[in-house]
Image (cartoon, rainbow, N blue to C red; front, side):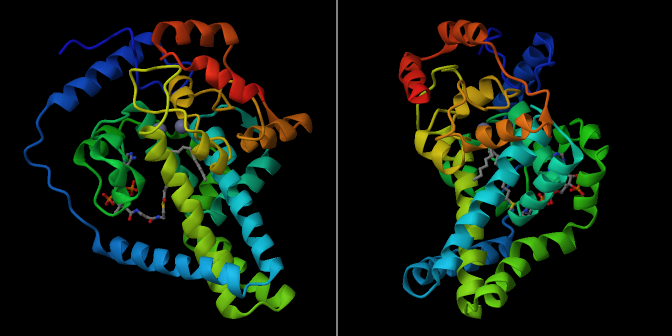
Length: 339
Ligand code: ST9
Ligand code: ZN
Ligand code: ZN
């Protein structure tokens, strides 16, 4: 098998040299073709039980949403969805994992609070997994390797111990920029207090005390249903947006452009583009807000000076890449973005 050195994967930042990218690609291919005789999946039954209970509760919450929850509770649920998703997309994904823009401390504080509502582990742990996902995409060192199937990429990876190759290679991943941010360090150190408060306690007591919602509706609708819903939208980026869609920018990689995921995940379903140019703060070629609300959010904060040094990719560079490695669908995506 001859590695295609014209097609480097494993790019993390704009500053990665071509040599770095090619070396990572070749190492990834070597790992993939090594047969891993000793590896056995170790299921974590505690997580299986907790996620099963969460999803059953979420279905009941969805039922209550349409039958007995107050309108204020439903609107509050939508608000928490929007807020916590932005804490993932604009926060841990585009700001901290990729450093695709810079933010003043008030914006970082706001984003860390919004991120804690989402309970997807601390910013440092999430960004560590995500940097591994880009650097070792679709190999055993990728936490949610989509080559192991839809279910594994979606939620199965959270139900078993991580692959030893991930833990081994993960020792080299640089997180110094994250540890040097006091707001991010504070979140990690106090996550065991901040997370239950922001994700479960406040979303439950606010509807009860502010508009006399019942405890049952408050627990199941804005808390458990909302949490499970946001998790599943996020997981779709790892599963559906790695499996079903077009590849206008790089047909040699698995990630795809998936309009439905992009809309639900506030702009994170333009995944073929994102894996090709991961340093672009828009995670998409063009900055339409309808299917990329996160870009609108960052642009707003750039307008008031809280976000700055927004990185993007020139249309010329994109055009060259499309011609070199894309499938023939690029024109369709240009018109979607221009709508
Ligand atoms: C959740 C996360 O749901 C969802 C993330 C989704 C990511 C999406 C990314 C793609 C989308 C991008 C766009 C955003 C879209 C947003 C859309 C929004 C709508 N590197 O982990 P442990 C080492 S969380 C380096 O315990 P186990 C390290 O030494 C849901 N090293 O592994 C570590 O020790 P320490 C709520 C690494 O024991 C040690 O291994 N949370 C790395 O195998 C142990 O680490 C849960 O449910 C690495 N990447 O257990 C918790 N990783 O940490 C679920 C590990 O001390 N998790 N090491 O340094 C668990 O229970 C466990 O992690 C486990 C694995 C059972 C899954
Ligand atoms: Zn991906
Ligand atoms: Zn990413």
